[in-house]
Every structure is written in structure tokens, then in C-alpha cells.
Amino acid sequence: MKVFLRVFFFFLFVLIVIIAFNVITFKSKQIKNIKPLDALEIPPQAVERFSSLIKQATVSKSTDFDSLAFKAQDSLLQNFYPLISKRLERKTINEFSLVYKWKGKDSNLKPILLIGHLDVVPIASQDLALWENPPFSGLVKDGVIWGRGTLDDKINVVGALEAVSMLLEEEFVPARDIYLAFGHDEEIGGIKGAKAIAQYFKDQGLSFEYVLDEGLVILEEALKGLNKPLAMIGVAEKGFTTLELKVNLKEGGHSAMPPKETAIGLLCNAINRLQTKQFPAKIDGAAKGLFSYAGPEMNLLYKSLFANLWLTKRLVKNQLLNDPTAASLVRTTTAPTIFNSGLKENVMPSEATAKINFRIIPGESIESVLKRVKKIINQPLIKVSLLEDFSSNPSKISSTESFGYRVLQRTVQQIFPEVIISPGLVIAATDARHYEEVSDNIYRFTPIVIDRSDLKGIHGNNEHISVDNFENALRFYKQLLINSCQ
Image (cartoon, rainbow, N blue to C red):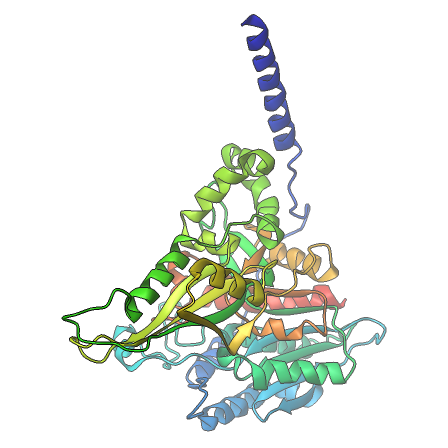
């Protein structure tokens, strides 16, 4: 017994030493000795210009496309930024998407590319009454700018344009070429916008040092155990696909005599199996990067957990899966979104269909999702098919050691010195995925500080941004260009 206890305490001691050693050596990945910059004064006209652009209802639609709104917005852009119109090369792609080129001093340096999108999502008529202020009012009230596009994504477009305009006024000449590219149909897939722009760049033989698109933000109370806002730079984005499940029985019948197997019953059982047998959680890739950067900045308990994932991975996964937002970072998600069947309450339908949306983590694919779904359902009466109208595999994971990531990290620390910076995984689709053939380093980041409640405004009601956030975004883009092009 004594021998057993001695062995037990010896191994316990060794375990404690290993855990402690890993905690001690779990060093910060934040850049040291970065001096915060004094806040650049932003002229009030910048807010007025932004407000005017928010008033343009540039809504993406597959049908009933309102070209007048996009043309009006383009006229405003040319009037608001005359130096850009005068000194940068401008090209339109498919009539409404825009590309600008700012010639740099050294053609041997690879160019950089800032992208965004000019379109916004529509507002359902029944939701109009839920807006505190009209969605296309551009109202500036009590230090807040209201309207669709303030977060998604005119803030990134205007941030880049204002920054370039300010630098032109200062006669700044970049060391490398700078490109701006703004698609007009991101919200419906970006086929005529970003995809066509990327093909244009490819045809020109261009390769970019880095690409920056909209994406993750600086989030307050982002993680338990972290008492500072977390700036997450998206190094990858999830893929997405929708599968259709369809049951087509030979006959239906009367509801008074229901058969043993019904179309609705079969389909409901299949959906239940998919929701019960979720995709496995994985702490790797972009998710692992997030915790390796944020972990050293957490309190001792959480720092110990993330410093010793070899021991705590199962516990950490379980904790993450309890939060839908966190769960989406570590696994492919399953979301039933549409169910159709039946015509009358006393008639058994012979047909039922459902659509299930999947957001796919890097390391998995549309093909692997389809294979897994068929295996889980395992029902020959249910046909599983891929809807290819709006599908994409997960992106590649960009490096955190590249020039692009380092310059982004440095710029964030200069403008937002109080935040912690980490790589992250974007769970929604962006235009960035179309640019993989013209750059190995693609990042997704929107330089604003918000909390979880503000996120609801993206594609939701009452989208808005504070004037402080707007002005800091302009400061960020200007400093990013300086840091990238000195």
C-alpha cells in the first residue's frame, strides 16, 4: 500500500510540475513596446459623407436589382473623394463593382489589397417597425450613426477611402502599389463582384502581399477569463453548403388511417438524428491559434487550461460546446432552415422536403459533410442532394508569421492599445474567399469595438455604429497603409 501511495504521489508531483512548467512557459504573443498613437483628429465632414452613403439603399437582390441606388452611390463616392478620382486608376467590373490602383514607388514590392462590399441585405417589411430609426436614414444622433450598412460593410469601404484621401492630401506616396476593390453583390455570393474582380487580378498576373476584408471585430467580454477586449483577426473562414433531404412515397392517404411510415415522420426522424449526432468538436487550426494567443492573457485558471490542452482538451471542448457562439468556432454546425410538406390537415402527404445548412470548419469539406449526412440518416427512402447555388469549401488558413499579419497586429496595438490580439475563424461567408488564387495571406478584420448585443444588428434590426468607432476605423486604415507602405 505504501509503495502504491509513493508511486501515486510521485506521478501527481510530476503532473503538477508539468502543468506548472507549461503555464510558466505559456508566453504572451502580443508585440511588446508598441507605442500607442495619439488620436488623429477626424473632420466632421467624414461622418456626414458616411451618413450620406448609408442613405443609399444599395440592396443586393438576385431579381429586381435597383441599379439607380448603386449609380447614385457611385456618384457620391466620386464627388466625396475627388483626389482619389484624380490620382488613382479606377476600373469598373460588371458595371457596379470598383477597383482602384494607387501607384507606389517600388514595383519590386508586392502590392496590398483592401476589399469590401458596396451592397447591403434587405429589410423585411414586417421588421421596419422594429427599427428605432429608419434603416436608410443615416441618422446621426447622440454619438451614433444609424442604418443598414454601418457595420456590414460600408464602414470598411469608407474607412479605406477616407484613409487614402487623407494620405493623398498629405502628399504621401506609398512604397508599394495599393489596390482597393469593392464588390457590389457580396450578400448574394459575390459572383459578379469579388469573383470577377479576382479573375481580373489573376489575368493581370497580380499577386498580393496580403488581402484585408471585413470580418471579425474587437469584442468586449469575448472569452471567460479574459478581462480585456479581444481583437480577432480572421485567418480563415468556414465553408458553407445546404443539403436538401427529400422523401417521395408512392402514396399518402387519409389522416384517419396513417401508414406505418409517413413522409413527414421519416424526414423528422432524419433531422433529429442529424441534430443529435453533431459533428465532432476540434481545437485545431484557427481555433487553436485563437487560444494560443488569448490563453496567455487570461486569469490563472483559464491560462492553466489552455496551456495544458494535452490534458484538458475534453473539458475545454465541453465548455465551448455549451455556448452556441463558441461551439461554432470548433465544429461544423448543422442548421435545419426550411421544411415543406402537406396541403391539408386530414391528408397524409406523400412528399416532404427539408433544407439543412452547414457551416464547415477548415479540415472538412462539402464532400465530407455530404458523406457523413448520408451515413447518419441511413435511410434509402430519403434522397440527400447538394444545392450548389451557394456553396463553398472552407478557406485556407493564412499565416500568423507573415508580413500582413504582423502589420495588422502592430496597427491594432497602436490604435487600440487596451486590447488583446489573436487570430480567429470567421463563421460567416465573405468576399475574401474569392481571392485565394491571388494571395496566400488573406485576413478578415473590421476595426471596431463592440459587444455581443451589437452583433445582432448585422443582418438584423437597428444596425448602427458609434461615431467613436467610425473615427477609430479611419485611424486604423490610415495607420495600416502607413505601416504597410513606408
